[in-house]
Image (cartoon, rainbow over all chains, first blue to last red; front, side, top):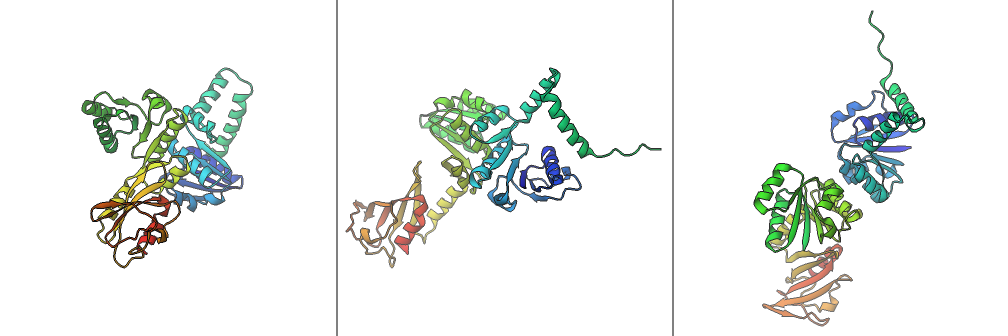
Length: 160
Length: 218
C-alpha cells in the first residue's frame, strides 16, 4: 500500500514507522527538516521537505499514486486543507485528517471528510479508564502500549 | 449590508474602515487581543477578540445573518476553513477568501470557495493595464459569474481593424457591450465595422480571455 503522510511530528513519525515495518511504502512530508529526527532510525520510506498544502509538493510526494493519505501536522486548518485537496482534487479514496478541535472535527466529518480529534479520543479514553470500562479502555490501551513497547526497543543493560 | 470580516491585519482593518465609511454594518474578528483593542480604539465597538476559524466565534459575530463573510488573514489554510465553516455552520450566502499564494485560487474553487482575491493577481492586472503597448485591459471580474469585463483599443494592422463585429470570431458566450468612438458610445451590431482607435467593451468568460485577445489582436 502506498501511504502519504503530511506532518512528521510524534504521531506522524510513529505511524510512519509502524506502516514501514508492516511493509507499506511510506512518504512523509514536513516543513521542518528537524522533524524527520522523530522517525525511527530503521525507517526505509521517503522523506520530503515542503508544504503539504502545496499542489506541487503533493504531486512530488506521489499523491497521485497514494492509496491512503493522512494529515497529521499541528495545524488543524492545514490538515483540513491538505486532506480536502487529496480527496477532492486528487481523488484519493482513503483520507484521514487529524483535527484536534473537536467541533471542527465534527463539522468536517458531517461534510464527508474522515477526521479524528486527539482531544476527544484521549478524553473519551481516559474517562473510560477512570470509569473502569472493561472494553473500550483496556483494548485500546493494550494496543497502544504494545506499539509503545515496540517503538522504544530494549533498555540498555544495567551498569556493572 | 452586513459583513463579517475575519482577520484584522492591514487588509482587514482598511477594508473594515472602507465598508463602514460607505455605510455598511460590519463585525471584525481578530484573534490577537492587543490588535483587537487597537482596532476598537480606531473604529469603535465592531471587533470581537476571538479565533475566526472556530464556529462559535462566527456565531457570536453574527455570521448567521451576514450578507457575506470575508476571510482576509495572511494564512490561506485558515481563510479556507473560515469560509467553509461560514457556509457549513452559518449558511452564509456569500463567502470571499483572500488567497496569498496564487496557486491556491484553483484549490479554493475546487473546494467550494468561488470568490477569491489574490493580491498577486490584482497587482498583475494593474501592471498589465499600465503596459503601454497593450491595448487590451481586463478591467474587472464580474462577481460570482466567472465573467469579466475587458476594454480593448483597436490597433492598426490587427485582425479586428475594419472587420464587422459578427466576423470577429469572438468565443461563444462573449459579447461586445459597446464601442467608444471619438468620445461617443455606439451600439455594437453584427454589421458594425470596427475602426482603428475604437475602444471596445467586451463581456467574456474569464477562461476565454486569451481567445478574445486573439480575435482582436491576432
